Image (cartoon, rainbow, N blue to C red; front, side, top):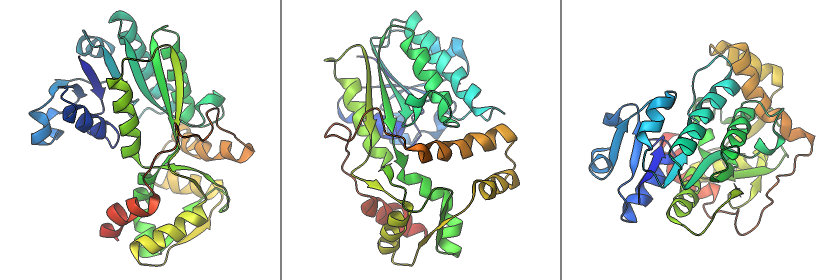
Length: 290
């Protein structure tokens, strides 16, 4: 079968590619620069130079595809919601014009709100665009990536602090991106499902930032504490990093919606729970960097 994978060098996409190759499939991968693919992978995939923002290129690259793994890549647009929706429109066009049998889309928890969730609103728009094709599609609504902690390396290394605008006791799903890739690959290879489906990917347990700090502290063998900051402090830090107003609000908005008693549409079950604990991930990925 022809399976097409977008963002094949990303944290989730690279795992999908690895598992498809190990399953005996030679996937087609959409990549701006094929040179970014590791040489052993490059030999086992059909790499197509493709900008996902180019609708014509996406349609050409997905001709004959039976299955598609789609991730809306960051666009750098002034309005990230519009940027994600623009990418989603290209995926929907390819699904329609090429009659792709099934698509797995990497969405996010909070997309079910449809508005008021910052950048996640762009993933909600993409869900709606893919649904409107009438084709078979699965929306994987992922929890908070463990790997987001890599963005806090300086503060963790220099201050031993993990900052968040959320209450320190607010618990939410945390997940290893590799585990998301496992589910995506399994669904791409399976032919026994159809229609429009949603599946949350919620990691092994819900965690608060206070709990995360304690787990990380033990895993990296150095003290780490959680510290709450205000949304305005977050805005100031993002503006200092050069982000525009809509980009700033897109990020700030991704935390604000959690404070209103949000309950995921797809609750925690055996289907939504993945195995990798944060402690194992932190020991393998954070400890060597700290």
